[in-house]
Amino acid sequence: MEKQGKLILRLTEEAKGGQGSLFYILNGINEEIGYIPEDAVSQVAESLNISKAEVYGFLSFFRNYKTDAADNKIYHKIVVCKSESCEAAGSKQLLEHIKTSLNLDFGKHSPDGKYFLDYVYCFGHCAASPAVMVDGLLYEKVTPEAFDEIIKMISVPIKNLGSVNPADFKKPENYIDANVSEIVKNGELLVFKRCGNINPLSSLDYVNAGGFSALKRVIDEIKSAGDEGKILFINELKHSKLRGRGGAGFPTGIKWETVFKEQSKDKYVICNADEGDSGAYADRILLENDPLSVMEGMVIAGLIAGAKSGFIYLRAEYATAKFIVESAIDLLRKTGYLGKDILGSGLEFDINLIVGGGSYVCGEETALMESIENRRGMVRQRPPVPAVSGLYGKPTLLNNVLTFAYAVFILSPLKDNPLHISNLEYFLSLGTENSKGAMPFQVSGAVKNPGIFELPFGVTLRELLNLADAYETAKMVQVGGPLGAYFPLSGEFLDLKLSYEDMSEKGGILGHGGIVVFDNSADMEYRLLNSLDFFIDESCGKCAPCRIGTIRIKELFERVLKKQNIEENLKIIDEILESMKHLSLCGFGSGVHMPVRSLPAYYKN
Image (cartoon, rainbow, N blue to C red; front, side):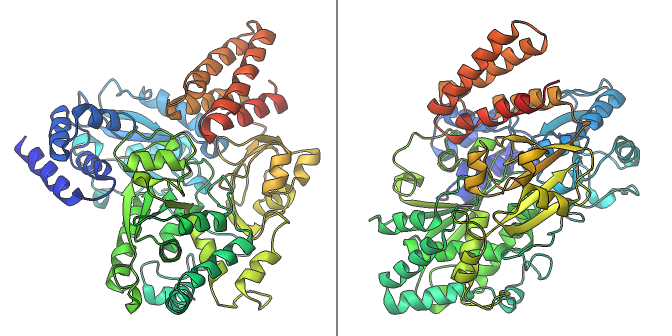
């Protein structure tokens, strides 16, 4: 108890006055103790001068927090990925093998108390699926045979709560370290060109590779022209037609302009790195391999919009990215690129890292801000939009990881592209009329050459799958993450252009650019039910159409699969989906109709 009290006191002191303080304190307790003891809730509430109900309400919202210790504290913890990309690569068979061989089920210990089974919906290692974590170590491309070998090799003494010392772990022969197979494939490589070619924690390497040239240009222009200089860069972004790469595709220049025009002493910049879409991992690759480009974009955004504080909101599952981002922030402060006097300009901007607690819906910008404010990550009703009234009611510029990196490319004065023209002109030369530039399409599943392909918008699905060398048995794809539509790999769909407008015409979305390929061995009934479980688990519960609709849809589909009142139940399902589409508060509830309608429509068992 005394040790616990000292831990909470230290974490509270470290978090004092900072944003996301509940995340910081609860994550710290979780890492040190392995769960959140009941008496710790009282201590945290008292230290922050809030109610116990507020603390419990917050921690109970996020799946990474547990409030009770296991009956048997000594065990091996196995965490299986349930994402679409892992499923397309054989995770169903792997999961069945794990459950049978160790007599396990989700949320339970094996009869001998040696193993505990849990799941996540995505580890973000989609190009190397299936992914499994055992005692904190991540394994990629795990087959049932490889899993058996992993279990046999665990011979070191087990620490409490399923933790082992990685240094004592003897790796099996077919163990694949994370990042080995996660490479950026051929393409335009506008923002991924430095990945793997520089030390991500060397500001000198970054500068020598063209880094910070956009920031220096922005600083010089603001120093000489003031607000007119800021308007110049906003207009360049508007002219570029850059759209947010986080899924919604909102015009970036307009968002930056809105925050710039708002009259407020306090403004914020937030980088949304809560990359939860299955099949999408480009944000993680960029943060792990070229984090300074993202932070340069955030500093530029802050200087233009008039904000002095920025935050990177990172997925809890991205441990390597957390270490690199923390180190990169420290590096930039020491080298003068962050702080009260950036590069001696007198201009001010700083960045802090906030690590989430495991919630897909916190990728939605208003839910994300709610959680930073120490509340449950439930979406806000709009208007007002975050650019007008966001974090703590202040104007907030919120963009995705990739959006900041593309903004840096566009505003950079370097002429390092194949046509030897300005980066803005080169960006405009790529893509389609309404989808300019390039997109990192992330292909996984039933392909021989998975990875990231940074290609211009307008590339066809056929062309992309040829580059990824899809299996001859491939029969369908899901584009745009768990809320994206399924398309058959035949006829007109193979010639579908991957752009915002073409996807919309076909009733789909691009999302984060994740594309999961399924072959003819895929179990469509299993895929549908797994998808419905995801919607139920991840609904924030704020609005009734989503909270009730997700559960009701699964109940009805289970009856349909049992051949009970098929036509009537399908009609009710369609009515619920239509209500969710138009009445849900955010894109999560309104987007459920895409996968749920397209999967049965194209693939009937």
